[in-house]
Image 1 (tube, helix red, strand yellow):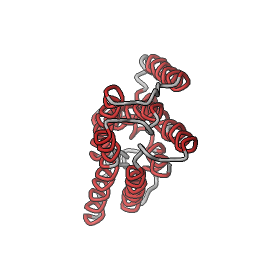
Image 2 (spheres, rainbow, N blue to C red; image 1 turned 180 degrees about the horizontal axis):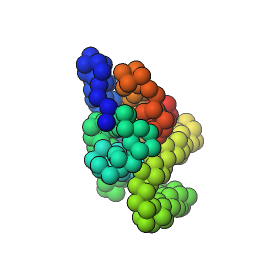
Image 3 (cartoon, rainbow, N blue to C red; image 1 turned 60 degrees about the vertical axis):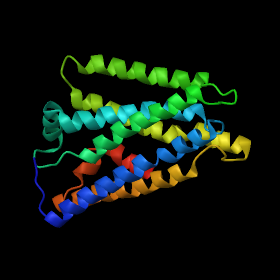
Length: 227
């Protein structure tokens, strides 16, 4: 496993990582606070949060597995080189775990607050069901040969796909209502800031290592920053 060549760049990497965590973590709270104040989730598309739970859970599985599992790290080094660093930091795991919990909090608010007649759509339920069915099949495919790196890359791909489509129901709701009342714009701005910090963190690691493998080795994180 590679080590840092520059202490200042290592410090900058850590700072950018936790700025990413703070931005993305705080992005959850404006919506939660808004729901609490209004005692209502009218204006918040329920499918958006259902899709987001699958996205956040998939990303947590990927980050936690690669960060904590020595077996998966070994497979990563065998594929990308033993001189490379793993492309997941502690802040990635912390962010993922935090946002799974916060998404569950919002879904709890959905259960207890005024919804204005909203329900989860059949298409969203079907999408989530199919995705988890595919993930289950992939688990059993990976099991015989212990292809865990391949398996978590599937979860990484799932989180990217979910990131790309999860905003569509909310965007459509805003368009049809001609209003963003009930949906926190502040969370979107913080989400954007987190993406900038996240991409910058990856760039700092690449500059220090003189290699861009951490981008190709974690395409999901790259696309997450851009999306």
